[in-house]
Length: 80
Image (cartoon, rainbow, N blue to C red):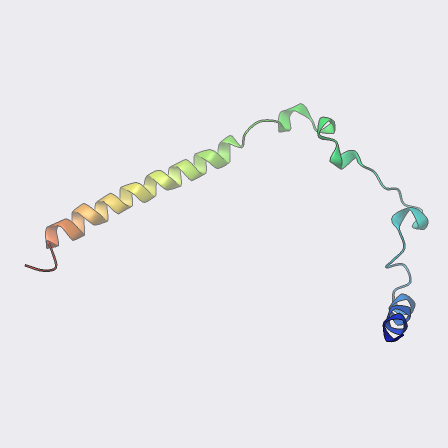
């Protein structure tokens, strides 16, 4: 079939592309799938990220209040 012909051409162009790593002399390890193999200091919540998001939220709220009370409220309603 045509697909087999293209696969054969692909295998000729890249002979090791479809070969598993163990066949090439490498090893496959499942250590990255085991959560108990992580160091103990990695556990816990990302406190620095939460602090950055909290500071950003606070600055956003302060900026919104300054714009609202400093620009929109003094100008008054659109219709009179």
